Image 1 (tube, rainbow, N blue to C red):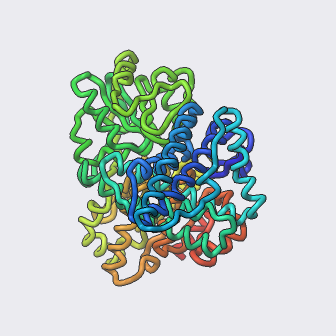
Image 2 (cartoon, one colour; image 1 turned 180 degrees about the vertical axis):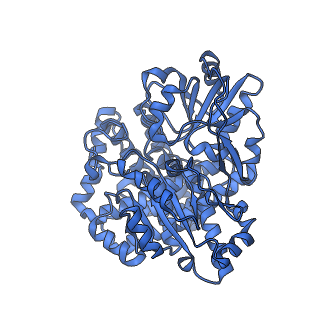
Image 3 (tube, rainbow, N blue to C red; image 1 turned 90 degrees about the horizontal axis):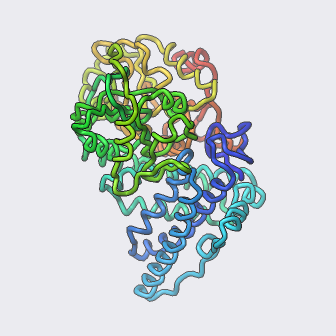
Length: 548
């Protein structure tokens, strides 16, 4: 195996024996096979779409295949094998759709090669060997590290965008135009000798797709559950039986809340589910009592101590400890071998039964709360106060400090940076990177909280909306605003957000704790020249550079 799609990859260069995330060689190779098949499906779907034909099953497969291979999603070889077998059938269907479209248009179908005709072995061991032949290492040898790295940059952003589109599809929102870009981008990635300029152009095109995917998901979330509202969230336990819901999927949380009504079970959020407390359609449930724990990387200790059932709705799962193996459950695309999986019927009764069998919390802890719910509508609702505070000098600068969290010690940078932000500055935050500092006291400026939690990683869309509105109010460009972005990355959704910001022309983004291994020095030089992308230094150095 070879994988360098996450920030914590071995030695900063790539995992070659077992993934830092916990995936073994078999899982890694099968994920490479599934990605290759998705490219083959997309080659036909792209050409069919150009002739005005599409099929929902084909679109959905590509999205799910990409999301399945995001870091910390599916570690189960059996489920991956099933997805690969289904992918072959979907590719055949996509080919037939393309050929019918050609016949209707009076054209001869192209004779395609590569992923469009590649055939997986029936034997699983032989299939794993095929996966090795599809590895990044092979492409690095054929194309060079710079080209292969740029291909992966595009692919990883597509994977992250696919996660957002999948969440939106679950809530009934989709846009055929987005599927068409996914297919076209994957088709481009099958080219034998892509030029650097073409790769960079496609990276920005995928950045545009990423903005649209986040916009689609925002519409799905707010259209279903209402716009987030500033809401205090309890972060201490309540006496009683308990279920902990982690991941990102709002609809799964709603289903669990409905299925636990009247059963004497308190529901807690974990990690990226924290922002759910701000949605009117979710916070109306009185047994949604609070948030437990912090970011995904601490789950093995936190889940071990949690006296109830745990449900993982999307990515961020780590290898479960034996102590809670029988009371953790997966659903959707996330899976771990041997862990009970809740199927498409979303019958969470096994988790409910496990919660009732577990001891639960024995007593109430003293109540402590944090404030969430500063989505774009909430912030823009007080835009006049914000603008006046900037004009009067009460607010000197805005910092967007957020992104993915992780295990490296260098991530303490973000805690120290937030602590050192001057009192006349406001911090916007989103994604699980906020757990580095969101329990600290920051106070307020003229009634405006100095820490504004904007939500999940996909809620970077909210930050984009707010920045655009402020730029319009001040009659300037986004890069002229008193706004600086200091981001942390871990997995592919962070790459999606980064390319979205680059597509929008945002410059001077500081990124850490380390730069991606797939960004070679030559590619980094290009990104620095075009976008002034910067690696983080120390909080002190960066604050001086930003504020002078």
